[in-house]
Image (cartoon, rainbow, N blue to C red; front, side):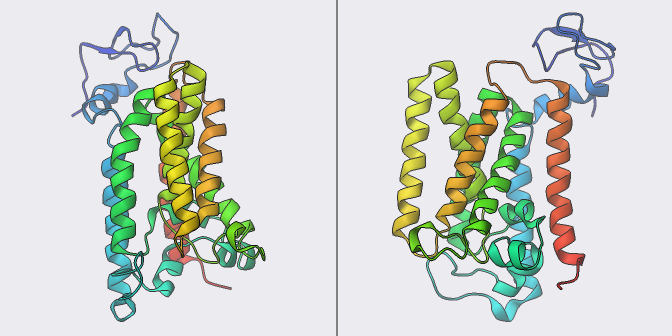
Length: 277
């Protein structure tokens, strides 16, 4: 339940304020208690429950795609084994050159990061979300982590969509593409920038190592959308530059993060209800 009395830590400056104060006297943030919700968000952990949202949302959508087309469940391929049909992926909001460039379904830049093409695919990606999201939230704050995650999904699938039909095999994206790996690379990109900005060689070098390994793996394995990985990394890196990790989170970051989550949900709904044409 929301806390209505007593004191809480201001989410911007970290100092004690009254839960019902209109303004934090230390940093000037309006409504630092967020109508009693600050304490609730704090109890959800470093990532404010985002990992649970991603895992729950991705698993629910994965099962829903299997349920709407059980006869199309894939039974071959390393990353597509046990996955939904291409028709189900498209209907729920897969991105790529065909949906975005041919059909103009631009909102799939948001929805595709919540969909997965196989059991190994979803398991691998949710493992990395569980590892990286809390760590990124520790460096940037939970709200800015959600913003970076969303930006990286957009930039990753945007690059994939606009390189989908290039004649160069190693540099073309996907005609139909899904997966949380684009925003995962974005979180790594944000960590790389944090290492540069804060002078933390350990964090920066470790994030670089993970990123390079994933991108090399993407080039070596067939069926991996490496342009989405590269675009996601770039989105996280440059987005982190704008969301300076050396400055505290502000109330507008939390509002933007909420908009990001609602927009992602709306993108899935739009994919289901907007006619194909």
